[in-house]
Image 1 (spheres, rainbow over the protein chains, first blue to last red):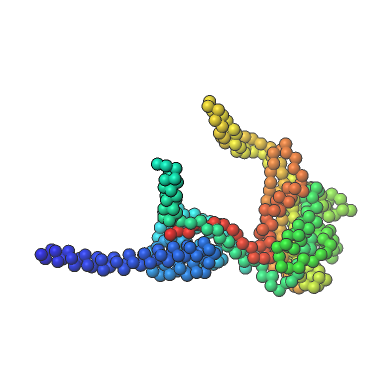
Image 2 (tube, rainbow over the protein chains, first blue to last red; image 1 turned 90 degrees about the vertical axis):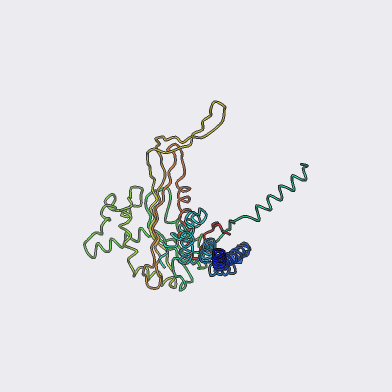
Length: 117
Length: 268
């Protein structure tokens, strides 16, 4: 009887912690998906807002950081783009697509750094 | 399974896969800010260039002509129509004046002038890049550029030096060779061969000068080369344009906002 109660208590605790986290990830995914939809229509400001919202909801969600990096790059905000890409890579170091985006960004960034202004 | 059932099944698969896609390629256009703050200038003067190397191409006139036409298309600055200055001659005259006043010959001039004292400019294919560099002292002559700027109401002045010269190099190169296997299938294999190659080297230095003060605002140096098979006979002028094509985006980037187009992958 005591074991059953302890098990129930543990279950409640685990669910109590896990559910909001799962909810946050799910909400972050929804924000990211919406951001992609609007970015594909050229609405980059809205997309950037959505991806920033996704990061607020779940800062460990690598795709949101990756997409935000792309949005910053598109906006010419190179320092912020670098930070976003590097965070995405820290969170998901084996993701080939993030790595590819980051490499392409570095090429562009090299050209910008030749800029004397 | 009938054809229509198969088609429907395929469409369903495609829709399912499409709906589940976790990444999307998206084109982006990254803006590059101009290298120079040219907000105070409304006009640009492509003054001319000190040039040397090949006699087949008048690099001074060709470069000035090319930059003028590119800037008319790609910049908001008004391009001044003026005679292209024979800058090498002017630099040479200035050096001789210095020589008379100081009794000294600036480094490099003695070599360039030794062949023919009557033609001290030495604009021939024997002039080396180092000899050409000796004439670059003209770019530090603030008074000269300020006077020139005053003549054209203080524009941005673009000048510099252009060394364009024949170039040869021999060595091992990798080439693709077609081979057919016993089944007649064609494939290519890399083969290393020794080749004599000839071509051209283009080494320009672009200098941006404030026409009001005569001071240098920004300098950009490039070096490009192109090599062909020794048997190939490519005209010098077409090689010159091919090499200039490679570095024009960078030069134009000094004047106006350029953008780099690319593709990135959005993740879900």
